[in-house]
Length: 175
Image 1 (cartoon, rainbow, N blue to C red):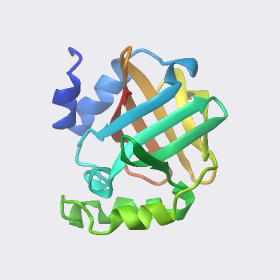
Image 2: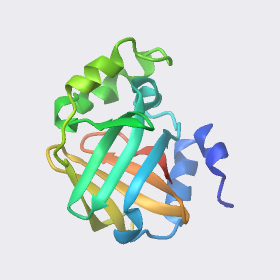
Image 3: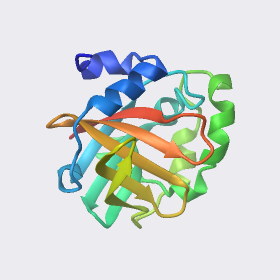
Image 4: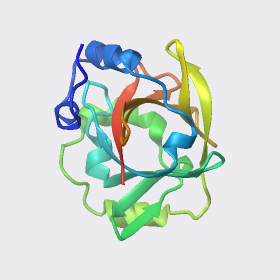
């Protein structure tokens, strides 16, 4: 399988193809994840497809291995981290396909109310699907985001949410 471009991935893949691609990619080190990353979803038919895009999610900020903002919202120049513990992520597996694929009115105001200055995740090398690679471990939620390298400035992420039927795939591109 040849590696799809970022544009091709953002249009979506079958879940089996996304899993095969993820498994074929090389590992990422914790140090390589440093910095701010802009995220987009990789639609695969997962129940959460579309939810991050309509919520105004921007991406992630990796300040160092022990200090990660897992959810950045807003626009460049006006980004703010949100406390993921305050978002009912476990329910998102059940509502995704029912949500219209457009912006949620008032989401910016709602997410600003959930903003935090405290880092809410860490990055570690973790084995997942047979390979040790960088992963972001949430402090307060049963979620681990695993990363594999697409290029020097892009990674494919697989969100491993406890009790989810399959990984939720997303892209991160370095700012």
